[in-house]
Amino acid sequence: MADAGSRLRELTLCVADAEERSPEAVWQDLTSPAIDVLSYRTVHNAGSIAFSAASRTVLALSELITVCAAEVLGEARPSILGVTTRDQVRELLNDSWLSMTGEPLTLRVGFPIGEGDPNHLSRRTAVRISALSTAVLRAADGPEPHSLDYLARHGISPAECRAFAELTGPDDPQAFELVFHWSWLAPRSDESVSVPAEAGERIRRLSNGRARQSAEPVSGVVQGSIIALSDDPGGARRRVKIRGTLELDGAAANGIRTVTVTAPDDRIYATALSAHRDGRTVRAEGPATRHRRGTEITVAANGFTVIDDPLS
Image (cartoon, rainbow, N blue to C red; front, side, top):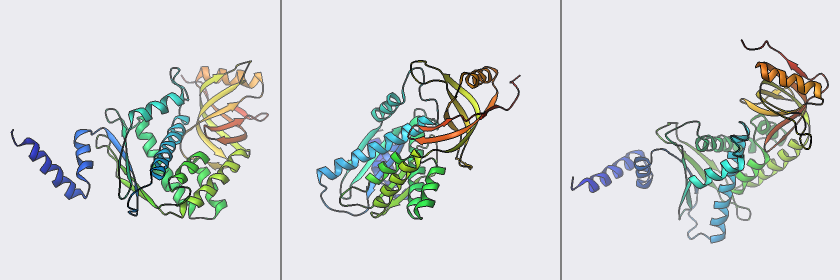
């Protein structure tokens, strides 16, 4: 129809007005439905924006996406058909798009999710950023020992805390808002998080505390299925990856995790190999260390148990 263009513009404006959104955001939904959008927006209109400040914000947002994607991949197998975590994160950044407007500064990052796959790396990364934002802000409001334990229970790494804090800016902290708008091909309720300017310094202190906490060994127990084994005489010896439930110092970690376990001797490694071949559930316990790529447990003496019968 000759008036199709003008009618589409009218429709876009009508929907934008009804949903209290920008026409650009509505048009993005209409033309690119398989996109999740993360928006960063400064709260106050500061007029013109210094180039250094804007570029710093873009870099901070890129770092936050990178570390969260790495954490998401750390919960699964770290390498798929020879593709490393770094390769997968680089591909995610290359496939995503960035748009920017000023007064106030607004950055919009689009994450493609294929044909609407809720398990797509892009979707899981955006969901991780959303959960991280809520957890870090809640931790920032409490006393430090309690806050650190809260972040540890939710599996928030020091690198994630540090990247999130950088969004406020290092010299002249700015309040900002994160808005998560999900593709209607894999619908979720939209979310927003408001971050006060003074939260940045508090979150930086928490990231330093998490770094110290992560370096300290704790008691760890993982129970689940063995998904991989490796034994390189010239490198890492007797390493077993177990996917299942994790406890640290008696507190259950959220969700299913993949934990790297180091067997102390050939006998325990052979037991693990046999359990993997037979599809049996195992339990490993011993000193645990936590870092960006996940949790590692060094099995204590008599700390490895096969706890069920082979699968029929």
